[in-house]
Length: 302
Image (cartoon, rainbow, N blue to C red; front, side):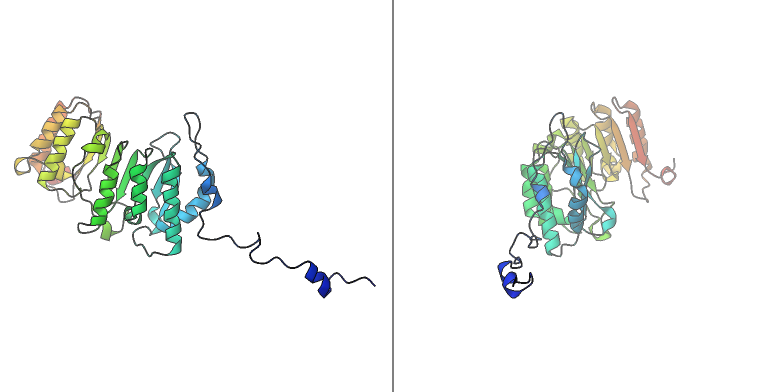
């Protein structure tokens, strides 16, 4: 008599696969296989990384980031802040956040297609990511989004890491997309010196600066002659004796690389003298092709 297919003997000869077999659940902490793909960017080809945008962004959203096309660089990819996510500024040290940081580190280390990096608080305070940035030779644009309310050793370390990037062309200090508690920005050390001497785009309108710091920055702008696109706040463009704006005006008259300029101020700005000084200097500027002023001219009597 033949044995039935589901008899105990038959089941013993064909055991159910154990959890340790190839059907076992994948380790959730392991970097996904698609991130082990080498960067394919070359002079005549873009990297295929964006083919995996959806699964990568599902991971990065845990720290408020995403990857997308970089509009400032042909065939480049941007690590960008997801403004509406509400994440990226409070690190809870959970596994999802740690895994996302691992992904960012992998991208910065292995993918030369990453050309712009927007840094939120979690990214700024991760030592391994700062090390990856210092060693990176492809990222040309960095956006620093917000800092602590008071001076911070971690903020300073992040700023120094960015300033060490010799290939950096564009530096933007931004507070428009971060929570109010982190809507602060300050300079740690001087810009346009050392590795940052090749900057062509600089936006420091959101940065807090003393008159001494502003004067140093204007001096560096005058000497380096590399910046083509500049955004500054009233702490820079009013710099001069008694807020006259004369120091910045002298820079404008003598600048021979500056092409676009944007001036911003706080809502209660009322320095009519500085504005008149600026208008006179702008009329003498040699290379400017575009000027934008986010000022309430009625407040200054114009």
